[in-house]
Image 1 (cartoon, rainbow, N blue to C red):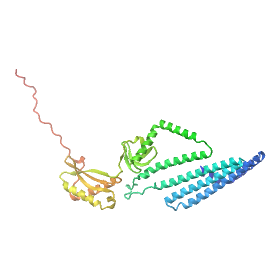
Image 2 (cartoon, one colour):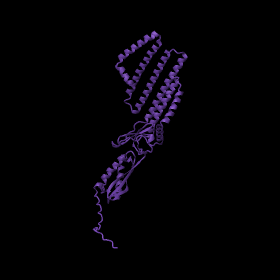
Image 3 (cartoon, rainbow, N blue to C red):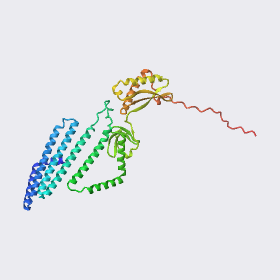
Image 4 (cartoon, rainbow, N blue to C red):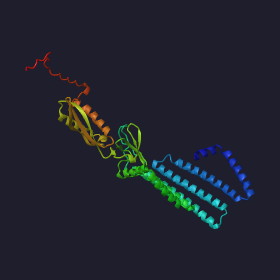
Length: 405
C-alpha cells in the first residue's frame, strides 16, 4: 500500500504540492482567526518531520539495495536485518520528534509535559528494542534454516536430504518468539502511555480459557504436535506413512503437517488425526524383491553371481555411500508351475532405495544370461494344464433288473 501511495504521489507531485500549500494557507487563516497558531506550527513541523523521514528512509533503502545483490545469502539476510533495524530507529526518532512538537503545542504544565515526554520516549525506545530483538532472533534462526544442498545422483533422484531435528523445531520457536515479543512489547508500550493493562491481561486470560474449552480439537492438535516434535517422530523432508495418507513432509504449522505425495497432491493433516506414524526415511531400509528363474538352474551359481554383483557395484563411490549391506540371494520363495521364485535383498540408506534397486536389476539382467542363468517366461506364456478327463463309467442299462425276493 505504501509503495502504491508513493508511486501515486511521485506521478502527481506538482498537484499534490500545490494542494498541501493551499491546505496550509487555509489552516493559517483559520488558526490566526481563532488564535491557535501553536497548533498551526505543530502541523507544519509535523509535515516537515514526515517529509524528512520519508526522504531519509528511501535513501537508506536505496543504499542497502545497492549493496545487497553482490552478497551471499547469509550476508544479504544480515543486511536486510540491519536495514529494518535502522528504519525502525528512524521511525522512532521521527515519532519522538512529533511527540515533542505536539507536547509543546498543547501548552501543558512543566511537570505534565516532562512526564508525557518521558512516557513517549520510553514507549518509542521499547518499540525499537522489541524490533531489534526480533530482527536479531529472526536472523539467528533463519541462518540455520538455509535450504539444504541436493544429494548427488541422477536428476530424478536428486532430492534434498531430510532436515535435522533443529531445522524442524526452529519454525515453531520462531513463531512462538514472534508472538511473545509482540505481545510483551504492546503491553509495555500501553503501560508506558498510561493505559491500565490489568483488565487487558484478565480479559485475555478469560478469552484464552473460553477458546481452550470451545476449541478442544484445536488444543488437541497443538498439544499432539508438541509431543510429535518432542518424540522426534518425523522431520521436514522425511517420507512418512500415516496409515491413510503418506508422502514427504513438506512443512509444518502449529496445528498441522503438510505431506507431498509422490504423485503431486499435497495433504494437510491436523496433528490430532495422525495417530501412529511410520517413518520410512530414518536410519536404514531393507529392500526385498523377487525374480522368476527357470527350474533346473544352479542356485549356488545364482548365489555367487548375486554376491559378485553386489561386491562389484560397491566400487562405485555413489552406490557405496548409499548401500549398507550389498545385494545377496535370500533363497527360494516359492515354486509355481515349475518356475523358481527367488528372493534377493539389500540394505541401504532410506533416501534412494528405489534407485539402488533399479541399478541392481540392470546389472542382474545383463550378467545372468552371461552366466547361463535363464529367466522364466511370463506366466501368460506357460502352457495351460489340460483338465483331467472324467473317469469312465459303465453304461447304465435301460432297465435295471428287478430285485429277487
